[in-house]
Image 1 (tube, helix red, strand yellow):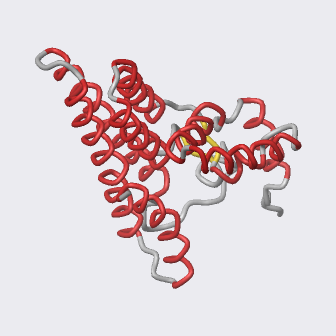
Image 2 (tube, one colour; image 1 turned 45 degrees about the horizontal axis):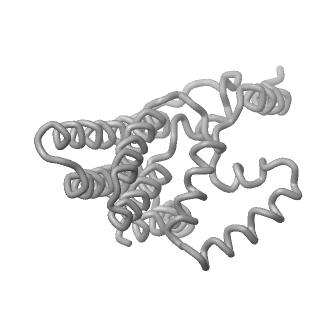
Length: 226
């Protein structure tokens, strides 16, 4: 519940700061620190502690902490890369140059976003603690490893609203919404995990879509005139 509360606050802190005119470089940097603990340390340690209760001791515990430790490290690396891409150096501005990968940083993420990874991992951990089966702990350990790899990868991910708009054919949305509502009534945890898993699997952007958007933006770039 605390991780989900952190995700809700993370969705509104940036827009609220810009709306009130109190955004700053320190706020951008500290936001990454808060995300690291909310979506890296908390889900990683929670998953490790639950797996310790589900698995046999000794060697299995070392594997558990290794995989969950890798997940936490991947979250730190993912957020460090994000901060490096978005924090601009102060000082004299440079002349305008043609856009290169201009969609990056505006509507896309490089690697799986840490909030999506943290929410999926902590939800899977909660479900595994209820299931208490060998399949549950193997699945949770595998999910932690895969999420860590996706976060440090260079796969381009859409933001959630863009991913929803990109669903084709459009009539499929009319099936997804009722299915999510019915699933939420039957089993909230499984439904949430399924929605997050769909974003992890389908939220990436193909190279064809990236090239199409970059070419379109290059045509509208305000090239300097004599």
